[in-house]
Image (cartoon, rainbow, N blue to C red; front, top):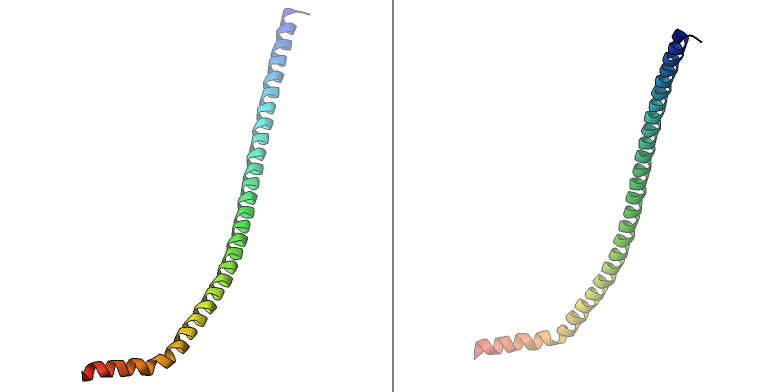
Length: 104
């Protein structure tokens, strides 16, 4: 092999190496891009699942709170009714006491 042939072979090898590097960089960029896309999809799916779970928990808590509120309301209504019924007999005595106080 002559000197020119060796130089051509070196240039050809350099050119092929540059092309190989360019191809590798392109594939690396494609892999990174796909990885970022996949990561974004995973994050979005996680957020969606998280929001769905949060809504379920909120709904369950709201239902439990409404049930508890109804119980408390019924107890309060019952207590108010008892007080009202207990006061029925005392009303006449109270009216008479007030009238007596004014008359004196």
